[in-house]
Amino acid sequence: MDQVLALWCHPRSLSTAFERMMSERGDMTIVHEPFLYLYYVVQNPHLVIAQQLDRIEPRMLESFDEIVERIERVAESGPVFFKDMAVHVHNPKGYHADERFLGRLSNAFLIRDPERAILSHLNQNPDMTFEEAGYESQFAVFERVREMTGEEPVVIDAADLEDDPEGIIRAYCSAMDIPFIASALHWGATAPSYLGEDDVWHADLFHTTGFEAAVEVLDTALREHPPFEEYRDRSMPFYEAMAAHRIRPAG
Image (tube, rainbow, N blue to C red; front, side, top):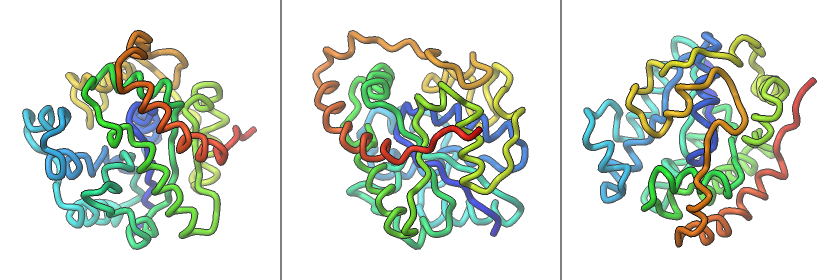
């Protein structure tokens, strides 16, 4: 099996832009959120996103073991990159992110200030749960990787990525032991093949050509939405604990 790079995220962390950059490299297969159906369709069919997914033709496996087997089969032909939400594999209905699974992967983490990420999430899904915010699960997986390896996991802060895309991606590539490809920092303003044109969750990405600051216009009125302050405050300690280990731009 070739290298499998995993980027563990929480929703609205610029992870799909990161995935787009990895796709532009052209040297690895991209597997988009492989555990999405497992979390929503199988484990949480009552949630809003599960109902949205149920209206489209299923295109993803729903068994954890089958998903892992699929990723491994793809990796037999070359390196693989996938990004997914940590909560999809580490939650009360399925603690799948164990050492056996994580030990097969080159793990990294992408974080974003809860103030911005949760505002963005509420804009798309006003009925989101705290679990869906994803920080608690992401921190648990972060801690598992740190304990497992005895090393500091690779953490990227979305704000740093927007401020210095080249420096942060150079640092990420060095940490993952893959070549830096400068041309991958820019792409066409179109939907990639693994996302549908009507994908409202990632619509902003379809109008960008690289990592751009302030592309997303946040509805600050959502600060008055009852869950916002609670979710932000509960998420902040997990974010800050991971942010303390974030990588710095490489020269």
